[in-house]
Image (cartoon, rainbow over all chains, first blue to last red; front, side):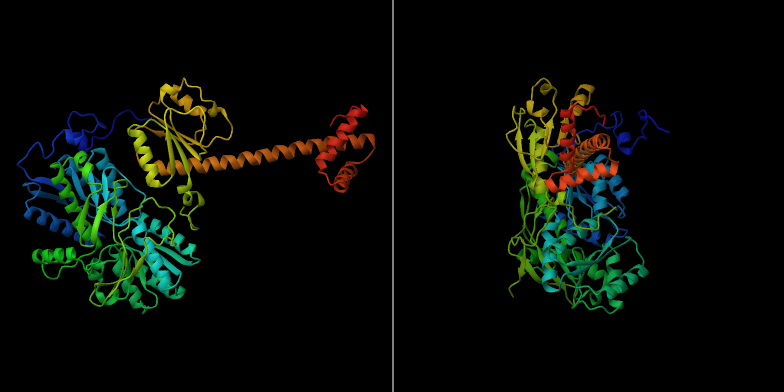
Amino acid sequence: MWRSAPAVKRRATAAVRFMGGVAAGTPIPLEKNETMKTRPQDPIRIGVLFSETGVTSVIENSERMGTLLAVQEINEAGGINGRELQIVSYDPESRPTRFAALAEKLILEDRVHVILGCYMSSTRKAVVPVVERWNALLMYPTLYEGFEYSRNVIYTGAAPNQNSVQLAEFMMRQFGSRVFMVGSDYIYPYESNRIMSDLILERGGDKVAEHYVPLDASWEHYITLAKKIKQFSPDFIFSTVVGDGTALLHRAYAQLKLDPARMPIASLTTCEAEVQQMGAGIAEGHITSAPYFQSVATEANRRCLDNFRKRFGVEVVTNQCWEAAYFQTHLLAGAMRAVDSDSVADLLRVLPGSEFDAPQGKVRIDEHNHHTYLQPRIGRINAKGQFDILEEATQRVRPDPYLVSHTLTDWSARVRAVAR
Amino acid sequence: MRSSSGTSRLLRELRSLRVLVLHPDDHDGQELIGQLGRIGCQVKAFWPPPDKLADEADLIFFALRPEILGMDLPWLRKDGLPPMIPVVNYENPVIVEAVLQLNAYGVIASPVKSSGLLTAIAVAVNQAEKARTREKYVHRLEQRLSAQRKIAKAKAILMLTRNMSEDEAYNLIRNRAMTKRMTTEEIADAVIKANEILGLDVKG
C-alpha cells in the first residue's frame, strides 16, 4: 500500500527539546549565539570523541592521548590568549550512532563549536551531518579513503594519494605484483582495495584474491584466511583490516609460519599502537605506509616525545593517528589565537592554509579541500616494535582526496630510499 | 554489488570531463565551482547564459532561475546537446516544467552542497551515454525495418509479374545484389521504381 507523506509528527529529538520553541529543521547558527567572545573569562571548551571501548579503542585511545598532550602544551604556553583550553570528552564506544548522538550533545548541551575525533569512516559519516546541521567543526585525525569534503570538516590524516600510491609502488618494486587483499568488511577497505587494484592492474600485476572479514571476526576466521594466503602464496598481502582484527591476522599468519621477509603484510593502518597490542615478535618484518612513525628523526618529534614521556611515562608509544591528533590540536589553537575566537566562521577564515611544524615535518591545511599536506613514508617493523623507515618522499605531498585514477608513473609523490 | 573488475572508464575519466557552469557568481555558484575543482573536472562558468554555446562541453550545470524563463536561448533547441543538470532554487510547477523541457539527467537543489555532486555527475554522464547508444540502436533498427519493407514489396512485385515463388523472388534480388555489388535494399528499390514506371499497380 502506498503511504502518503506523513504529517509533521516527528519524534522530538534531543536537539529539538533542547531548543525549546524553535521549530525542527531550523538550526540556530551558533556563532550568533554564544562564542568565546561572549564570556571572555571562562575556559574555551572543545569536544573530544575518541572511543575508549569497542573494536577500535586501542588506536582511538592513542588519538585521545595525542589530543590531551597538545592541550596540556597549549595551556602551559598561556592557553588561547590567556584563556584555558578545556576538553569535554565522551566515550562513543566505536559505534556510529553513539558518535552522532554524542556529537549533538557536545554541540547543544556542552556548547562546543569544535569537535576533535573519529577513527572509522562509518563514525565520521555519522558525525558530519551533525556538524553541518549545527555549523560546528570536526577535526578528523585519521587516514581514510578520500572522496569527501565538507566545509565543516578538517581532515589531517592521509588521503590515498599520500599513502596508497607510495605503498603500491614500493611493494611491487620490492616484492612483486601478485597481491592477496584482505580487509575488514566496511567502506574504507572497499575503496582502498579499489585503488590498490587499479594500481596493480595498471602495472600488469595480479590480484590473486580479495577477502573481507567482519570487524568482530573470530580467530577461526583468521586461521582460515591465513591458510588461503599460504595456498595462494602471493608476493605480498595488502591488509585493510582495522582494530582488534589486526593482531589476529598477524597471529594467524605467524601460526602458519609464513615468512614476512618473502611475503609481508603491507598496510596503511597497522602502526605502533597495533604492534604494541599484538607484540613485536609477530609484527616484525611487515610494512606500513604512513606520514609519521615514532622513529621519525626530526627535532619537533624529539621535543614532542620528550614532553609526552614526561607527562605519561617512559613507555609511551606513538603512531600516525596520535601525531595527527596532536598537530591538529595545535593547528586549532593557532587559529583560535589568531582570530581570538572559537566561532566556526572565524576559524574557517584562518585554518585552511595554516601551517604547523609537526613531528613528521611541516604540515599545512589545503585551502581548497580542507585536507593536509603530509610527508609520505614507508616503514618496516623491527624487533623492538618500532618502524625502520626505509623510504620517504623528498617533499610533502599535496592532498588530492577526489583522485579516482591514481597512477604509478607520477614520480612527484614517490618515496625514495632514506640516506643513512 | 561491488564491482570486481577495475574502476569504470567513466570514473577514471572524470578529470577530462569538460563542464560548463551556467550559474551566477554567488554562494551556490562558488560551492559548485569549488567542488568541481576538487573532483578535478575542466570547468568554465558563465552568467547570464550565452546566446550561443561557443565551448564544447560534456556536461552543463544550468541555474534554472525564474529570470531566465523569458530568455530566448536558441541553442537549447538543438539536437545533440550535452546532458544537463539544472540547479533549482524554486520547486514550483513553473520551474519543474522548465526542468522537463531541458535535456536534464538529474537535478540539484539550492543550497548547493559538496556532497552528492560527484554521484549526480556520474549518473548524468552515464545515463546520457546510455541514451546515445539507445538512439543509435533505434536508428539502426529503423533503417533495417525500412529495408525489410522494400524487399518485401519487391518480392511481391516479382512474384506477381514473373510468376515466381517467394524464395525464387528473394534469390533473384540477392543474386543481383551480389553481381552488381549493391545492397539487397538498393536492388529492391530498383525493382519498385521499375515497376512504378511500368505502371503496374502492386500492393507490397
